[in-house]
Length: 320
Image 1 (tube, rainbow, N blue to C red):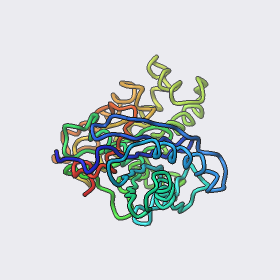
Image 2: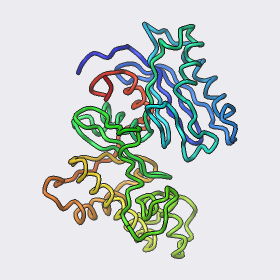
Image 3: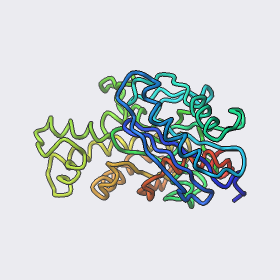
């Protein structure tokens, strides 16, 4: 592995309820970190204000050996070339110029010219994949897809040790692959997307529609499935069949056999992984995608580690 361009970087992980900020060194050690809430407002600068304060404080407290390098992972969609984000779960940010805003805050905090602050932007699914590829379950693979199964279904691919972003930075949006061309219309505008069947809230809604009254979250649903509740078992099986179809489609298109699955729903373990792997046998039919392996994620903080990897600038992590 080549030598990183800096000894430590600033990493930012943007989510719908919180924004995490950390200084991370080239070994993946978190040197210092902070969190800020993501305010529920439509005022874009009011949303950014708590994060800006945390970013400025963390950046100013660090000792920088040279120009500051920053990696940002954000819920999407994003526009990588433009440096803007439009997270579905942050309605106040539409084409918000996050790269320019972060660059300005960091430059002021470290008393540097803005043009000396290098900022990289990637989707949160991409950063998850980078983190798991660097230090987690995908560290022994040159090519892999990382997936997050939670309130949504996200993904990202590392191919030949480099992040594959696509034209705009939204490649491998696995949750919005259609697995049912005659299905209902998804919020994205397509029909029968993976997310409509496999994401946690969708499975809970389907279970409740079938008479399950065990709770309102996926953790309760998976717990009941583990205990053998027939509706919970059937609904998770149905959701994992949709996810298996999306994984096999992605594997076929990218010619990749190795997947890492993380996110809140995936933490249920065998109750999710067993039906997923069983259904993969139906969809991963072509010889070049066999055998298709799905591993559980290993890292609790893969997203922010992936943002750090993006900033480190090492070819292993997907940047020049």
